[in-house]
Image (cartoon, rainbow, N blue to C red; front, side):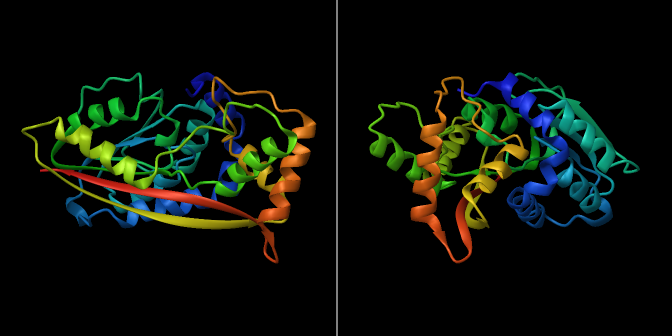
Length: 273
């Protein structure tokens, strides 16, 4: 389970650093924007953005649909502050700080969009049910999230370290992510519960690779965006463990380009017919 208070604190604290280090998240956001239909001047639509962060996608949405009414939500007040500054002067944007798992809505939407956020949900199924129920006819949900191959090098090094040190650590390093297949099936399961509401769903997955000069700099990049382990059941891992972890990572996943880190990017698009 994700500790939402800790998550909120970490993202707020690191909001000013986020854009500098979140290059993969930005590419994911651009991929979402490119998947949206072109509406021209007729795009006076009602949009809900979940996990707006620093407003990168919010700004792109406003530029893509200048006549849209956009409600942008984020858990972290520090992120909201940066997003407001980024979109200053743009019309039709309302920001709201809150947790999508706890919020209720009185409006309906033509587009619900979320970039690199749903991996922080504790109950994805309930959220998707809620969001699909908020769609107007011909409305769509588009979202990206991280899949189970994300940081596969780190998780493999973590296992090697436990074996090398003979430590009976039960928990993994960070929360677990869905595979693309499991996520797609879960979405189908949720949508099929709306028996009389037809839908169309598409999905795809991409593997993004980044390189860092050292393992320490890779860890710093995660910390600087606030995306460190926020699980309630986290174990304490001492300096000796991390020394061995860094050694395992550099031994097994470093080449002439540097330390390798994989980002498994999952994309889902759902249209309510």
